[in-house]
Every structure is written in structure tokens, then in C-alpha cells.
Amino acid sequence: MRYLRYENCWRCPLPQQKRADMGNYKIRQIDGATWQLEDPFHTYLYVIEGEREAVLFDAGNGFSGLSETIRTLTDKPVSVILSHGHFDHTGCAGEFEHGRVWISQRDEKLMREGFEREYREKEADFFCALYQVRMTERERADFAEVKAPARYSYLAEGDVFDPGERPLRVIETPGHTRGSICLLDERNRMLFSGDTVCNNEILVYFDHSATVEDVLASDEKLYGLRDRYDAIWPGHHSCPLGAEIIEDYETAARRILENPRIGERVELAEGHKLLYSYRTIGISYLPETVYRDDSR
Image 1 (cartoon, helix red, strand yellow):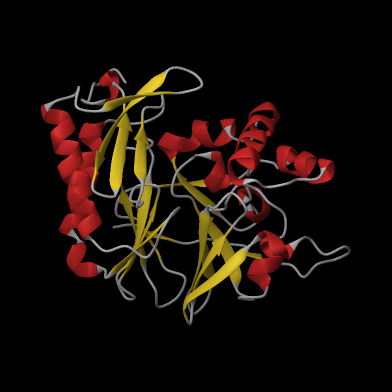
Image 2 (cartoon, one colour; image 1 turned 30 degrees about the vertical axis):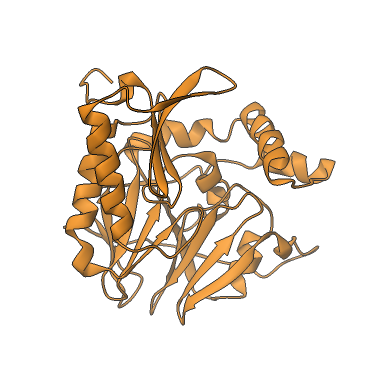
């Protein structure tokens, strides 16, 4: 077990000139030292405060006002732990690089690709249409121009980050991406799951995804720890969740492994996917992302 420390921690600054739009974030207080923030594209971020410092688990899509919003919740130094490399979870990470940003090395390339201007412009248009969000030209330009963190460190299975009397254990959960992780707060009996566990569907059809076989292994690992948490706090959709939803993912994954053609074909803007739905969840995949292949 490796205990992680960070130096020269970044402290959320008070606004210097024009105040950024704090209205971009809805705040839900989970307990006296834990908050869920929701940005306009419905990604959840979590502020997890310890005795000495605070951790921001995921950094959202990149909307303005995040540091100012966090400053209203805690004045302690803040570092960022990223659940995976997708742009909707890494967007504001660059604001915190003077502290520390942590990510799985397996998602480093994916994270950096999510800060390419053309990619961010395309995703902004897609999600604005999907969620009926209106951006001014200035807001759209700012969104497209957010910068990747220049400095970051790598996390791995079993690492522990302790912001003070609140150890947070890293659990590797490849599936959605190869570098996906969850964060376990045993003291407060919370599991922060990113996109590994959501009450909707897990997408396992990208070039950078792992496999359905990995999804099953990750879910078996998380379910094996179910006596250490009471609530799962995901990156999207309804919450909190109970460990029983992990059983549903296990069942769905096993059925796909037994019959890779079980999923319904769904046409996409580029290509297609197979979707197997079970109860309230689903797994989207392709035939080539069902079984592990050392060449992937």
C-alpha cells in the first residue's frame, strides 16, 4: 500500500477581478465534509474534505466558476483525483496543477486528447444540443480553450491518499476505459465510482475501452468490498446507489460473455454498438471488446 502525499498544495484563490460564473455548478451537500457538484452537462464532481486538505474527485467538463464554487465550501488546499481520462471528467483539472492532479497512467493519452480544441468544440455542440444548454460565443471559446494540466502524477491499485483522518483508497476498475478507477472512503462508507458504476449504461466500445471481461472482473472486485461502503456516488445519473446495482452489472457481463450476440444493435453517428440491457442498467460493447486480448 502506497500512501500518496502532495506538496505545495494549491489553495482555491479568491476571485481577483470579474467573478466567474458560479451558477454553472449545482451543489448537493452529502455530509458535513462531502459535497457533490453538478455541471451543466450533468457530470458529477465530488469535494471530499479531510482535516488538513481536500480532494476534488473529477473535474467536470471545463465550465467556468469551479474554483470559486469550491472556495465557498472549503478554504483548505485542493488536489484532484481523476476517475478516468474522458474530457467530461478532466475539464478543469488544469486549474489545480499547482497542487497535484492524479490519474492512471493508462488514461494519460486519453486525457490529453480531450483538451484538443477541435475535439472540445465538437463535444460542446453535441452536449449543448443534447441537454439544451445555451453558450455565448465567449463561453464556447473559453470552453474550447481550457488547458490540460501540465503537471500530474500517476495513481495505481491500492494507493491511499489521506487528506487528514480520511484515507481514500484507489481501486483500479478497467472497463469503460483502461485506466478507470474508483475511490473508497471506508471511514465514511462511501464509494466514488466515476463512470464504472452508474444507473444507466456503461460504454465499453471505444478504442480506449477495456473489455466486458474486464467489466466483470472490476465489478466482482467492487462487490467483494461491499461490506466497506453503504453508498455509491457515481459520475452521472441517479444517486446514491446501493451495491445491488453491481450485481446487475455482473449478471449482464456474464450473459454477454456467454453469448456475445445477445446485445441489440444500435446505430451511431459513426458506426454502431451492441447494447445489452438488464433491469435499470446496460452494457454497450462491440464483438471485439467482449473478451480480453493481449494485443489491445
